[in-house]
Image 1 (cartoon, rainbow, N blue to C red):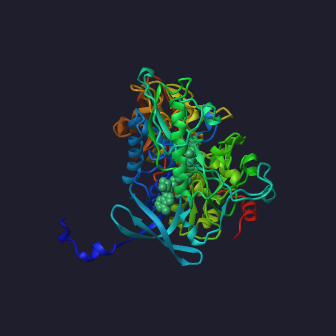
Image 2 (image 1 turned 90 degrees about the vertical axis):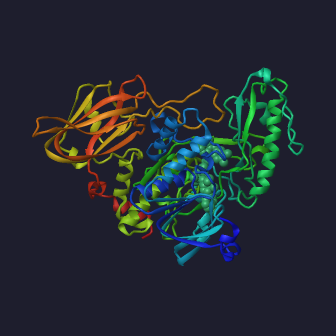
Image 3 (image 1 turned 135 degrees about the horizontal axis):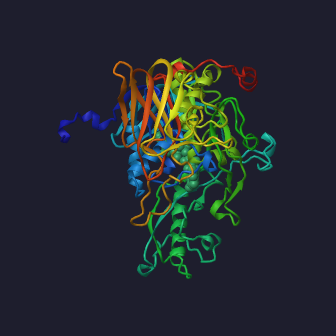
Length: 612
Ligand SMILES: Cc1cc2nc3c(=O)[nH]c(=O)nc-3n(C[C@H](O)[C@H](O)[C@H](O)COP(=O)(O)OP(=O)(O)OC[C@H]3O[C@@H](n4cnc5c(N)ncnc54)[C@H](O)[C@@H]3O)c2cc1C
């Protein structure tokens, strides 16, 4: 197009593009991505608005922080996060950040029901009334236009809680010990937070290729005896401790913080690379961030505020929808400038439960939150903020939002009327809710399982991981067969498998650039190819009705046609030479809504804890 093709007015005044959705998710970090995917997958017309050109927030190539979560190999987060990480292992064995960004992008871009708006920053909002958001206004950086998004429900996953402009109640800073009786809180409340950080990525090299690093003239100079420099060893270092800003305002002062972080980061790298003991000779600086990652600022107030005490008591909540398990990792507000330890790791149990009531605003009726901005105290947030936990919070919010649309409920209405459905949907989608058992699909109630190998009864217990009480995976070699037999013919509808993806194996992106030739791989026991057959009464033989090819998911869901009294799964291959391991093998309803039965909900306990 030449300039003359375009009406002059559109060059002088930005156009406004009006769009309407059921669910609007603001912020495409790990929490927002999981929220948007789960809302869309459960049928809500959803938009994900992300101000950067890539998804992932602090986990993206722009910040490069690795994803941490609950301690303990059997306590790892599953659901959408595990799906993302397994897809990344399959597509990105060399662990390139560009490919990781693309894996996240394509999950959102090619998801039915989901519109992805990248490079689009939400800057303001309009209210329908005092307690409801009507729309958000966003600036599209590359299309140079306004986008006005109206929606029924909003989920603020921006980290910085941009939708606080709605007037929603929020908190900033550290609570006093007295407010919630938190033993690790300071005696008086203050506005201090954890700071922002710039990360660096190193690449190992031949020490003979060492060339002294020349720092910019504006970099700070640190002696080899500077406490942080003295402790820093390049191998396995992700430089999270290059952190400042917690004594000021991590939003308003963001530019000044970035400039200071750059001065510190180049100074620190110079001291390490040129260290007299030669520790930096085998390493070179491959990448340094220009976008500081933010740890903490605005947290919404929900119907419950999660505290240190809740976490220490294992978070036993009736409305459990997610879990945490990282220590309370309470960084000193002065961080890099603090002469002592940059953080204190207060122990936290793993797992502990996080209640649904922390995931929506207490006073804005159509506002959810997920990520580092959920309703908790500073101390609780020092644990819940890690990204695997944020992923489970996002998945819970997205699922709740879709249910709220389906049932014409507010976020709080889901708590009162559809909590069981929310929890069971999350379990069915492979989100772990510690101590909660998944309800078996009705088809499985009278079904009998047999197999050529292994203890087959393990496969239909409503438990999808190894547990302390002894639940294990079924295991069988290539060629093994599992048969499900029903007393009468049933509509097959859906095969649901949960594969062992070896939760103890780290699947996150690495802090240093991998060595040439280094390749990550999918777990060797993960089911790769399988054949599914049904018994054909009329023909008197097994008939293939579906097959699985190059599977790399932990949760496998296959639509099956027809009716039968027997279904058989044959393991054709795994991703290595190990036997296949499965936690569940069930036939279920295609539409999981039908599976949710009313159960006896402890309504009195909940009513006492929640405003009407
Ligand atoms: C340096 C550092 C080290 C850390 N170490 C770890 C670690 O080792 N492991 C770990 O798991 N966690 C770690 N954390 C914590 C973790 O990264 C954060 O708590 C987590 O990223 C929060 O997730 P989120 O999705 O809420 O926010 P973010 O990851 O910040 O994502 C929010 C997204 O929303 C976008 N956004 C913001 N405003 C708008 C707007 N107005 N319109 C549209 N989009 C918007 C942002 O650009 C961003 O991409 C660390 C954090 C930092 C900063």
